Length: 151
Image (cartoon, rainbow, N blue to C red):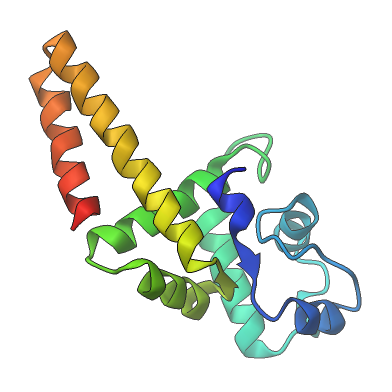
């Protein structure tokens, strides 16, 4: 299961009630993305909720792909966002708190920790492959990124 499949809409029931429709709990589920992408019913939401949803759509759903929002760009942008929060020195619980404050989405702390750990392992593999291939620049980039994530 992909990390973004473990990102959930905060106050899901309240949001569905305000929209007068059922939406999946997953922030990156197809029906949720449809609702965000088309903007149908957003006028029914209170201003704070609407602003956060629009921020989410602007920050993660904005790309020029024909298949948008199903092109993978939203998920990739969100994972980059989480990695940037970690590079700023935030721990898994703080990352969850920030994503909830910023976009009204949340994840379980253990899922964030697992994603960060997997990211470090992938960077270690990239560093090793770059070393084997003699690509010093890529090896150094992977090493630097690994240090940022490891804290």
